[in-house]
Length: 313
Image 1 (cartoon, rainbow, N blue to C red):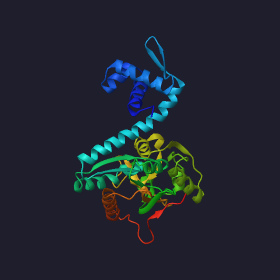
Image 2: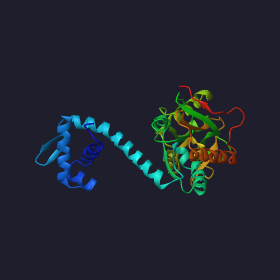
Image 3: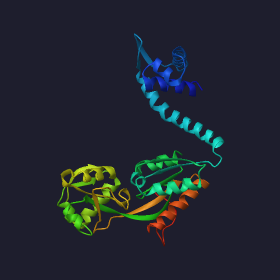
Image 4: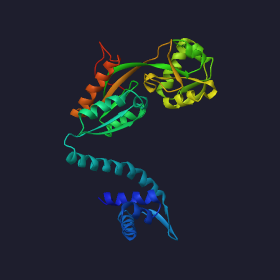
């Protein structure tokens, strides 16, 4: 192999810092060592990677293209290295989990707390991913387990619906509609609306509900994350109201915000998702059990016909 991992590391460092000196500081080696390895890399690859003018480096078009390939590969190498070190340092293993962003605000944290109380030696890596990203994260083995707040379809994923929820309305605490136990879509449409963008699944769900109800509407502000809607409503932006998933506001909601059920129910189904090519680890099985217990305790668990299935694209 002509382009070795150490060469990739040095090339990446030069691209990140923009200079040989910067790369040397980043990698804790001497500047001449960086210069020699870059020169050797150019020679062995038969590529000119940098234009040099009075000490200034300018990446060539070939270097830019190579960098786009090196970045993900180097990050994966770092992940494997970290995993190998974890195997030695943590005999109980590790779990990498991703969830829909709104589940990270209220629903998932109590489960993570319980899991770490009973599995203190397990290293947990937790991050959020959009629905469109989850298949890539799981099949690329960046995450072992995902929890999605909306359905996900992919031929190579195993999807297990386990809990239910719904969309809700949020309003400034002093808003006139906050005095009602429930709020209808027609009532909301008469006010400035903060809504999910129609090019994401949440936005498509809300748009479909307005259409079914025969209500014309227009968003004043388009958002892609529920916490943005909460912040805008709390600030009284245009005396706006919003529709978000109930997991983003939790049982206590946000200070200064009233949460009301919608008269027209927009249901949600939470699902556990994993790659069909990998067997779940004992850590993933333990976390799954705690997650289902949490759903049952909150009265959200699905019953009856809900089963694990391989999703069909």
